[in-house]
Length: 157
Image 1 (cartoon, one colour):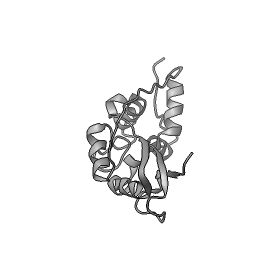
Image 2 (image 1 turned 90 degrees about the vertical axis):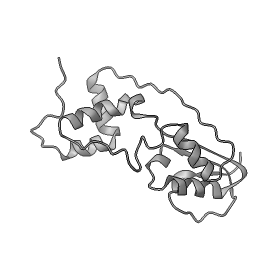
Image 3 (image 1 turned 90 degrees about the horizontal axis):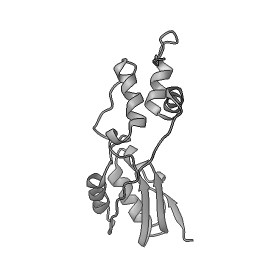
Image 4 (image 1 turned 180 degrees about the horizontal axis):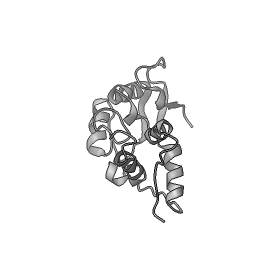
């Protein structure tokens, strides 16, 4: 196995030498960076010729109800602000039409984008809510800021 570089560290510029690594792996980070093109360029810079990068992003919001359903409830109840579609965010790089030009401009050659289905299963709304409040940053922040006397969600019986 060759040398591997953690691309999460590539947000602007790094101190690693040019062409030092065989591969880069990044999970759910490039779309959250203020300058993903710069981060991808930096990733390319530290890879040897023929080096490969693999990363994951979330697809479009409508394909991710695990996030949008609970966030929609919070927004509907006035407990958090709607998401902005501008700038970085979990849905900023949802498809090949967004990702391929960035990778090409960053200097990567053969770009392959693959969509993968991911299913979340919950036993009921309470389990979904536990997942949402613990793992979804904006929802956790909104929950922490609320009045303890105001219930977040009233599930139908």
